[in-house]
Length: 385
Image (cartoon, rainbow, N blue to C red; front, side, top):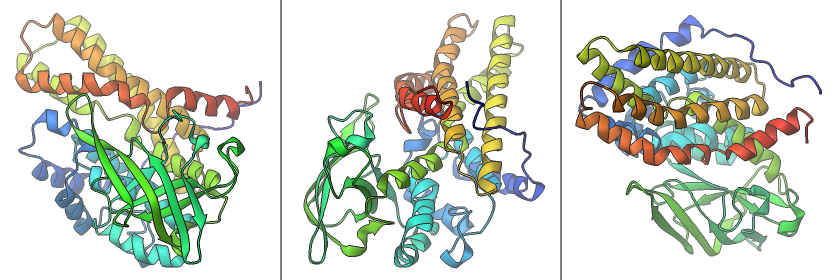
């Protein structure tokens, strides 16, 4: 077996970046003071445009982007601190999240100067919301099986096809879509390109999909002879697979894959404190949660250090995402079992939060890449397939 192609060298968040935590925490506490836990548990899908614009006014969107595009030019550690505080508290980040986390870095790295000038300052101000056009009907997790096609025209591109599971497409201004610009689906990674799509263009239909909890954030997006300008192409034609792989690394490299169930943990802890000392079983469970969270957080901070050095930790990020998802999905079940033997009944707030996350937890191993896909990536990195 070949040597492990990544390391998780212990890293510490620099003091200057750690200092960001206190003002962010104070801002969040004020903004969310009247928001119940069951609503805060929806953090990733909690769409609040005004909250995102307020973050933009604080200078907390696009922290790592260069100042010439409106960004703060700060380190990956600063963004880690901000992300950790937002998600742990259950802030409604969905409006700006995709743009800040992956679309802006993608455009900065691969986009034209015109695309950077047009999009990045809007993103930083919390005025341009993005969605991701990757998955398609009938292809499952096979991202390379893209069938949506863009053909060149005299003025640019004509796009036809469909995307699905596109979060908040009905509220977004732009989509970054992976489409086929040459060849056939059997050509797999060849002939794929990324397009920047203004979702107000004629010929685009967005259909929200209601999930099991009653929320409507997933969408199906249909493209019917959509005319796009020539500068809709991001990067080089045919380089879409390499670019989307880099984009997925941005998606998987933050602490996002640890904290989806943390509002539930905090709500449960608050009840334990009100009722006094926990029993031995509950103490053991708390220790298990603390130990696993601490280990995953240390690994995630190590990835932030790699990003800060300009590295692309795609393999390590896939590994942490898989382990983090496993913890996120386990937490509702663990807490439900603990509540079965608790001497006091759970409060309505705790019951509602637990009910929501019990329903949503299965989706945690789908978003950002299924567990099977991630383990395939790790296996290839280890030379096992």
